[in-house]
Length: 219
Image (cartoon, rainbow, N blue to C red; front, top):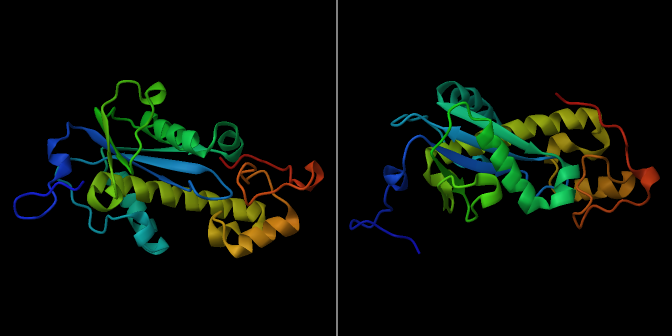
């Protein structure tokens, strides 16, 4: 249910939250290949960064322009990454929570409250007793979540561009690991590589011999 103020507008949710709070969002949860990445961001109170919104609504050029601005002006920012092998082991939902946890752990300023895009909180075994809330379409409503969204997507897109140079036959630079027709056709032709999520329905390894085994560090 949406709660409205007497004038019919949505209330300022973050006005009642303790500070510093971290906005959190993820990128790559629905992909067939590559990691799931979460961003966490704490913005100074009152800071306005022009152009902040859901990262998916921005062009790559605009995201790349905002990426350094967010990192320079944020009180703290962090990114958490979970790779396909771990995704396959614990499932994508738990991997998403783990990426969020890792992003929060990377913040140089400890938050006292978490605002998470979507409708699912980080489980107690990861977040412990950290107060948190969820915000549907938070990346459109809460600047810190918008910033986290841009951090996560830009960081992940750069990783996928690096993976494209290592595995050019899959076209990662074009689709960033999502299940496009071209990507599914490439998997069918070449078999999956180590960056594919083997538990996902559209990824089907034929035999161990068809799996590309090269996996050098990207860091």
